[in-house]
View 1 (cartoon, rainbow, N blue to C red):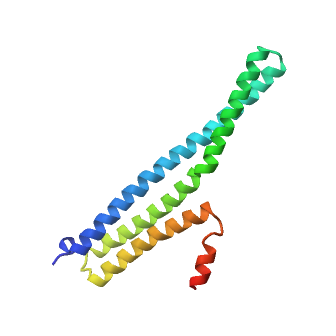
View 2 (cartoon, rainbow, N blue to C red):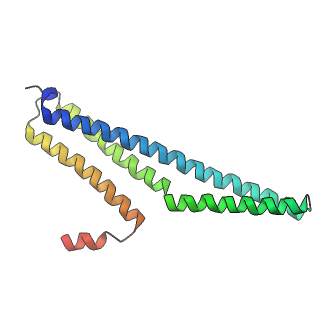
View 3 (cartoon, one colour):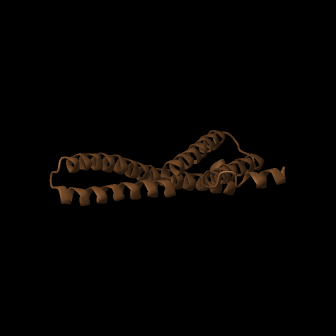
Length: 156
């Protein structure tokens, strides 16, 4: 039986491809969100500085103060959303998992040029599961630093 027709090879290859596509799409989405929020904060901060200067010069005094409060509030809102959603951390974590999955896929493709036994396929599947699990653990640790340390020490 060739590697490509082996049910475990097909399943592993299919899962690797779908996981890679998923993590690549999610990482790209969180990268865009991070940049949008970060650049929004930069732009609004610059705008509020300009408005504060105009307010000090008594140009359109009443309206400038109202706009300044609105722009400052929007800046705080974007900064808060970024702090809560943590798109930069999520993007880096997803990208790390995606790269690990790409490495494993490349190894599986290389092994497929020869004959892969069932034991090797099982080991590759376990490695994929470990990559996914470790990514989830890293993300939980970033959300709650120190939360998982108690669980690890009790199991060691």
